[in-house]
Image (cartoon, rainbow, N blue to C red; front, side, top):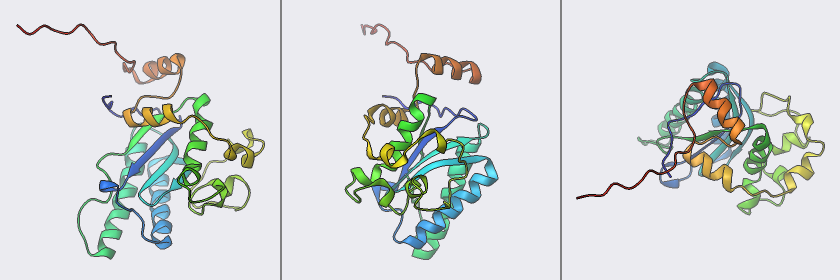
Length: 218
């Protein structure tokens, strides 16, 4: 399915993911992971990007973020990755790209927001790295369940009280197929009302088009 020009809806959550080039590792050690989070926080503050959830895997990253304006997403993620790439390349004595050319993203409706958080936070569980999401060091799960009093990246806590038991919530599995497919194409995760709202807000036609009749070649 074709990938849309990026859809950014200010003040709405978005799922973002990006892999290392050729799926190579982005991080070699915990120092690099800490530096990466510091760069992402710096650029999030600078460009108006709020982080609600994240997970750092060896060769890819996931975020749930809320952009303040239409440029916050590309600037916050893009500039953070540039800063980290520059530092890592200098340290490793290499040149070139570290991340794939363009990160994937999609806006999330309220009904898909928490499912997306669960998808992000359960990545290490599905990869067989840990038994429980909150056992993984490099995600926001341990903060959500109260194992950590602070988090190096999450800077919005208004949604935490909506889940009564985060351990129970993060222990359940979901059907992630829609979030995965829509993140790849950039199409919003939501019902028709959500799509209509985005079209009105952005003054842009984003509904799926029915394929037209095939042209006969004479």
